[in-house]
Length: 154
Length: 210
Image (cartoon, rainbow over all chains, first blue to last red; front, side, top):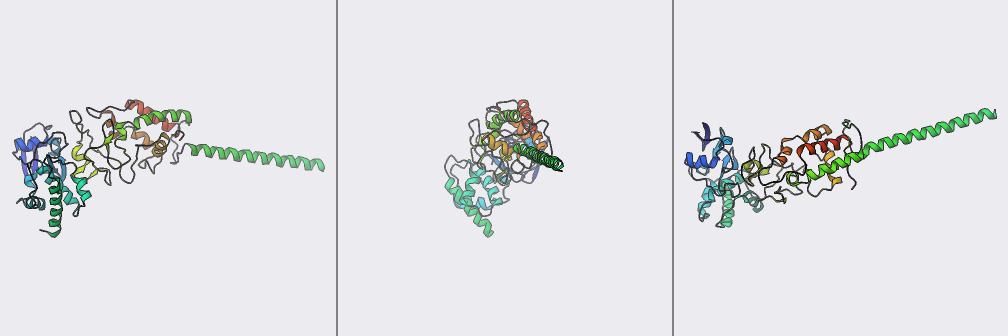
C-alpha cells in the first residue's frame, strides 16, 4: 500500500510501485485533468508538481511520489483562480485543450521562480510542452498577462 | 711559493665546475617535475613514464570523447543527446548548478534509475551537467587540452589526484556503461577505462603534444 498526498489530501493506493504516477492519478484516484500524450516524457501533457517541481508523470514511478507532495491541475488553486487560469480564460487560450493542463502546470513553475519572465525565459521554460493545435502565441501572451496579474496582486 | 699558488688555483676551478654541475642538475630536476603539470603537493606518482602515460591517456581520450561521456560535457549550455550527439530535444539549460532551470530541471524527466524501453530517459539520482562556473567541457577538446584540463584542480572540479583516481568509480560516470536501450557504450569496458585512467595518472599524467 502506498500513501500519496495529492492536492493536500492523502490517498492510500494498492498499486505496483513501478506504476507510472500518471495512471495512478487517472485510473485509481480519478483525477483525469492530467493527460497522456506520449508516455516517453517528450510532450509535457502529463506534467504535475512533485514537491513543487514540474515532473513528467508518465515516466515518474508512483514509488517516487510516496510520502511526497503532489499537485495536479485540479489542485493548482482552490477556486480555479490561479493567475494563469484566469489569464487562460481571459485570452481564450485552448483550442482542443489536450495539452493545456501540462502547459499551465509548467508555466506555474516558471512564474513561481521568475516573477517577470522575458520572452526568452518563456522559451526556455516552455520548450518542453508541445501543442499540436499551435496555440503557442496565446500561451505566451497568457503567461505574460498572468505575470502582470501576479505582480499587481489581482 | 709558485707551486702552492698553482695548487690553490686548480682547487678553485674544480669547485666552480662542481657548483655549476650541481646547479644544472637541480634546474633539470625542477624542470622535469613541471612537465607533467602536477602541482598538488602530494606525490601519488609511482613511476614517471611519459611514453606510457601518454599511451594510456589516448585510451582515456577515446572514452571521454564518446557520446556517453561527452554528451554531458558539452561546449554550450544545452546537453547533447544520442549516439550522434545532437542538441538535446526541448533545449534544457545548464543553469547555475548544472541541474537545469524552471520546468526543465534534469530530474524532472531523468528518474533515479533507467526506464525500460527504447530511448526512454536514462536515470541516476543525481543527473546533472557540470555547473556554470566550472563547465568541464569535453566537446571540441584536443588530447593535449583535455589532459591539461583534467589534471588542473582549477578546471577539474577541485579534485586532487586521489580524488581523480576515485572518480573513475563515480556513479554518474558508470552510467555511461549502463545507458539504457538504444545507446552504445564507450569503446572500452569500464575496467579497461579505469586501468588506463589510473595508469595515466600514476605514470605522471602527461599531456600528449599539442
